[in-house]
Structures are given as structure tokens and as C-alpha cells.
Length: 268
Ligand code: NAD
Image (cartoon, rainbow, N blue to C red; front, top):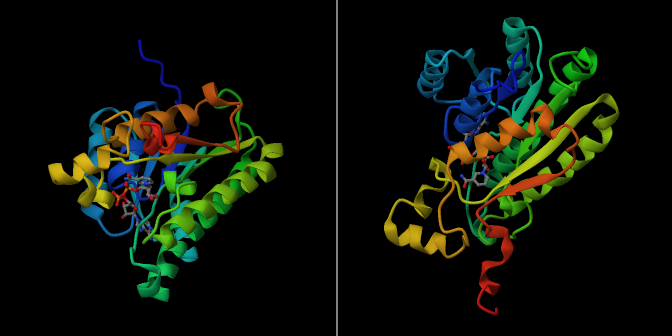
């Protein structure tokens, strides 16, 4: 019999109508958590996911919010609490790219990526932490008062020419995550990062949609396959479970070896 590790808990997953966020929402729901599927534009996809989760016996609602807007974030948390009454898990997943060479990058391209990828994680972590601190440890539900996952990237540590806004946002997430982990550990709140490599989602479509592009991408992946949202979902479900209760303040890379400097595999 499958044990539902997250039974009795609830979660907000941002940007859950697509890609990795969808994979995380499905995995958390499978593990027994009630989930809020955040979306900003695609209400239809969010509703489809809610229906899919319910079809498998889970509980889910869709909540519209732009994570870079404080007012939207506050309203999202209020809606989650009004439906589920508590919060145990926050997954800061929403993110985007606005790529350009440095000399061509507009302030708007820079600012949009920082606002969504970094400020969005700050706003959602802050609101989640307020709830977790007030709630404290819920005996019989979880060993921790709350768990936060910051979706980072291998670009937390691998520089990325032509994407300085994105790489800076992910580098920023590392120190946001670690500083939050340090500040919140005394409240029994765990904060960790997940650093995906190449996962097959719409954000990086041009890197896998033709066999030529995919073969080029695979030269960067020692394990020789592109990752899937379910890979990240399974990791997230475990990382927020009590099996990972002693883990806080660290990024787990899930990248088929992309961070192993594959260029050196043949003597450099
Ligand atoms: P995706 O484009 O499929 O999903 C991104 C999601 O974020 C979408 O649902 C989008 O609507 C949402 N989003 C964008 N702006 C938003 C906003 N202002 N408010 C709320 N939601 C917003 O891409 P993905 O690959 O699933 O990306 C998810 C996360 O994973 C991102 O943080 C991304 O940086 C990270 N990541 C992805 C990869 C990869 O290879 N796919 C690798 C490393 C990190």
C-alpha cells in the first residue's frame, strides 16, 4: 500500500499551470497534499490540472495571481487559507526568461525577470513564513512548522551569457534561500532550493523541439536524457516530507550531471 507522505497538509505552488510547477503539483497531490494551483495567464490549463488531480482523488483549487505584485500575492494567500484553513508547503516555482545580449538588454527585460523570479519568491516566502510562524508545528501533521522550496536552476552556479537577468535572478535565489533558512530554522521552518538542469517544458522549447537542438543539448548532459517535470515533482514531494526533516538551507541539483563540467569528461 502506498503511504501518502503529505496527508493532512496543504501547499501553494506558483506557476503550476505549466511545466515543472504542474509536475510538482501532481506529485504533491499524489502524496496526499491539498494544492493551490497558481496561474497568472492560463486559467484553462490551471482548471484542467485541478480536474486531473480531483479525478485521482486529490483536492485542488486554481488561484490567479501575478507573483511579482504584492497585492495579488496577499490575495492568493487569503484565498488559500479561506479554503484550506492552514498552509504547510510553499513552492516558489513561477519564473520566466527575457533573453538578450547584455548590450541589447532593456531595463524592462532585466526588471521583469528580477521581479518575477526573485521578488516573487521573496513576497511568497514572506507570506508563507508569517503563516508558518503563527501556526507552529502541527503535531501529527509534519515535524516542521512549514517547508519552503525555492525553484532555482543550474544557473545558480553556471554563468549564462545572453541571459544575465535570468542567471542573476537564480544566483540571487541561492542567497535568498540560504538567508531565509538561517532566519527561519529556529521556527522549525525548512527552506531549500531545487536546481533543475534541462527539463522538457515550454520555457526551453527551442532547446529540444528539433532532433538537432536536442542532440546539442545532450552534449551538456552526462546522463544523456532530458529531464521531465515528474523528476522534479518526485524530488519536491520528498524534500517537503518528514523523510527530509534534517535538510535545510541547501540546493539540490537535479540535472543528469549538467553541473559536472561535462567538457572535462574527455580530459578537458
Ligand atoms: P514554464 O514556462 O512551463 O512555467 C513557468 C510558469 O511560471 C508558467 O506557469 C508561467 O505562467 C508562470 N509565471 C510566469 N510569470 C508569472 C507571474 N508573474 N506570476 C505567476 N506565475 C508566473 O517553465 P518551467 O520550465 O516549468 O519553469 C518553472 C521554473 O523552473 C522556473 O522558475 C524556471 O526558471 C525553473 N527552471 C526550469 C528549467 C527547465 O529546464 N525547464 C531549468 C531550470 C530552472
